[in-house]
Length: 461
Image 1 (cartoon, one colour):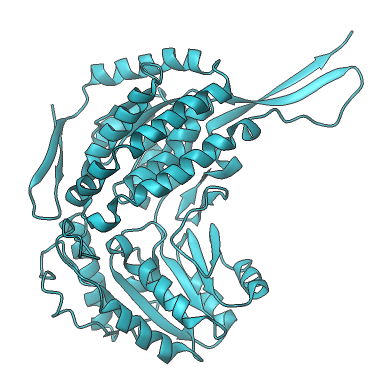
Image 2 (cartoon, rainbow, N blue to C red):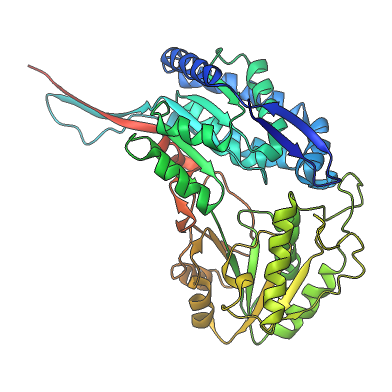
């Protein structure tokens, strides 16, 4: 039986090793989920909410243990680790609160002699395939609303964050969720695609790479299962001349380097109007130099290691290619003693004199580096922001809300931000365009892919 292993980016030690779930275990979990779901779908929405609220409480009670666990598993500094549960709670509570309304019948205009409505029916078994970079936030986007909608859930968590799957299971079990309704399985990539291709699940919710998303689509072909994909990103920021510069610098720096740049909607490229370019760059560099790259278990550390050596290698390769093509690095990495070739520890970097021939401006880097380009006006900024195979979020930094709305209408993206970035509002749909994927989670819209419409056309005689 193959093993799934989590190797810590902190020091290379083995954090946890698990035998992959056997074929028999997978089959048993699916059978139990089908049985439990048949009963759960009849439980009133309010009662589902009561039970899942207890699961949220149970997860929050583990906060003190979760922060160091995350540091060991994927490198996020302990000073930030527990904060992920704040977003977990916000999203879970919101999706529980809106469930009654979002799942209510859709009733058309009255028609004499008829009762007509569209009901929202659960689809059955939802498979959530979660990533390691925000292991609680990404999973909760589908897990809680899927259960609220009356479905069963199978959770396959990333090898890098295996212990997060255990935490979800413990919270659901403590809340008293019916046995078999929620199950965490330890699956290999092959087991995952085989399960999807078997037709045993009814909806797949995946967050990860474009390549893996394509593999999931291929596996699901012909099963008629729904597939929701949140894939790559290369999220841009545009700084207009009327910007509140101090606010923009502080937040764009954080948006670029938080979680060592390993954020789905982190800032990877910045376009700055010529009128404020020089001042913006100077302040950006000054603030970036203040990061402390060190052991994530140290409370003074503000930048931890990247999750895996191969991810750090990609960042260094993108920086090297850009420098070879004429880019200029603004951050002296020597003071960041942990940054060494082959290490998971990567110093923050800002590059200027960049262009769209460089990987650092076009490919998903997913690390602590950002390219900064000067633009002459809104039109040039929009053209460059749209010159990307991805479209998850885009942020506009300005004092003019009407301008932000107008510019946002021209950007090919799933979410438009003004004067903020790297945040998911659970009241809004989380979605993307182009190679970022398809489908949506969160908000009322998020319930649509987790249910199917069933029409009732009842006639009096």
